[in-house]
Image 1 (tube, one colour):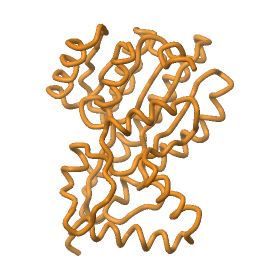
Image 2 (cartoon, rainbow, N blue to C red):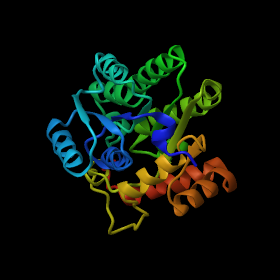
Image 3 (tube, rainbow, N blue to C red):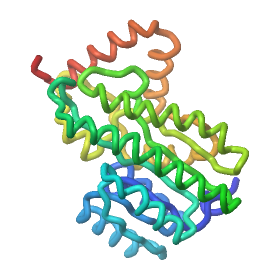
Image 4 (cartoon, rainbow, N blue to C red):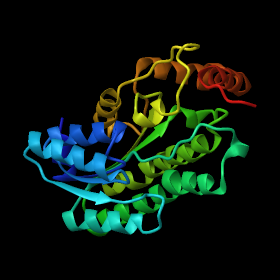
Length: 268
């Protein structure tokens, strides 16, 4: 089995690299010998991670401080990736907020769309277009969420925008494969990231499976180029099979929304 470096070269770009699954992917790639372009809006956390990488591994890092909700973020990422001949891109970045739909502001709505869908779309388009023009192979890994498969209450726009990444990945897996570009989407369940823990889930009422970022990152990277879709954690895969294959969708929706009511205390 060829290693990721054999397949995708020496450089990888990780969008949303500073914390959580993004940081875990970044460290895993550094262990495999990749030089990393770290992209994140959290400048301090990104600098800390870059320092940790260069202290532990004989690789190079490039830090790109960028807000992926802004229009210029895509071009900045593509210029950096192109200058390094980068052939592996991982998009982990996501905007998430647990709240009733009507309590979200127009700024929230635009940020959901821009970070979770718009920048992702333009970055994948520009990245794959360069690889095809240069007649070289590459890989694209997109991190999505099980929430995208049903559409739970309190995370309606997050779920909708993350569903975009799943559908895009499925289409591009078929379309770009003949050009030697692998596209895989990792549909993760709950992960103990700062973003998720910051939503203050009520673990007193419910004990869900919460995976570690390292587990999720390792599973996603191990499936890159092998499967179009992958779901880390056997319990998450069982949940997917139950909700998507065995239950009528109306039952699955009832189950998921009841689960969300227990996990979060949202005032109606």
